[in-house]
Length: 336
Ligand code: KG4
Ligand code: ZN
Image (cartoon, rainbow, N blue to C red; front, side):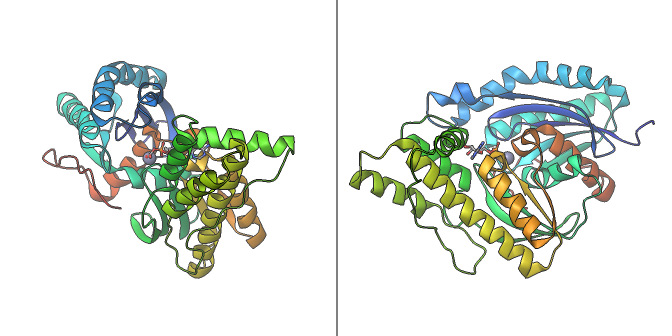
C-alpha cells in the first residue's frame, strides 16, 4: 500500500543521535540510534558541549542510514521533522538546523516536535488503535510527569516531580554508590540479580510524597540512600540498589494508578527511558491488569530516546496544525 505520508525525523535533544522514517504516523520503516553513553560515562553525566559535537559528527551518516534502511529517497518524503525542545540547546540546534536545511533543500515542509509529545506518541507506534482518553506516565532522565491525554494534542499534566526526575535519581544514586553512568540500567541489573539469588532482603527506604497528590519528590529518596550508607557502610550495593528501585517503582506505580482512578480512564501507558526498567514494566502491567484496564509498556527501543516517536508525533502535528515556520528555533525549556 502506498503510504499517505512519509516523515523523516531527527532526534538530538540529549545524548542519542537518531534518525527515523515513519509511514502514515505509525509504521516504522527505519529507526537508527547512536548512543553517546560511552562518551559521557567517564564524566559521570551528559556534557552538553560534548553532546553537540558528537551529534554533529554522527548526523550525516545516521541520515544516510535512516533513508537506506527505509528504502526511501528524499523526493519520497512528505516532511522533515526534528525535536525542537525541551533539551540541551546546543544539541537541539544540531537537529533543528539539519532538518530545516534539508527541508529547504528538498522542498519539503519542516515540522518541529516537542520531545515530550514524542514520548507520548511512542505507544501509538506499537498500538495505533490505542484508545484515548488515557493516562501516560513519562519517566526519563529529565522528566517525570503523569499526563492525562484527553485526546491527541489535548494534554493535561496532572502530576510532576517537584525536584529530581526519576531517571536523574537513579543516576545520582548509582553515582554515589560508584556504579557508573547511566545509573538506571546498572541498578536494574543489580537488583534483578540480587532478587534472583535470594541472598537477602532489599533495604527498605521511605517512599517520598505518598499522599494523594500526583506530584513526585525523588530527591529525598536519594538522600535516604546516602544517609543509610553513612550509618551502615557495610551494606552491599545490590541490597541498596534493589531497595531503592523498589521504593521508586512503588511510588511511580501507586501515583499512576491514583491518576487512572481519578480520571476514570481505561487505558494507561508508560514512556521515557525509565520505562525500560524491568520492575516498573512488570509492576505497572500488573497494577493495570488488577484494575481490568488496558495497558501498554512500549518496547525498550521506543521508551529511550528515538526519532521514530518524533516522526510519529510530527505526522500528527503536520496534519493537524500544518508545517512549522522555519523561523521557529529550539526551546530548551519547552513544555508539553
Ligand atoms: O528518555 P531517556 O532516554 O532520555 C531523557 O530524555 O532523559 O532517559 C534516560 C534515563 C536515564 O536517567 C537512565 O538512567 C534511565 O533513563 N534508564 C533507566 C533504565 N534504563 C534507562 N532507569 C531505570 N531502569 C532502567 N532499566
Ligand atoms: Zn526522552
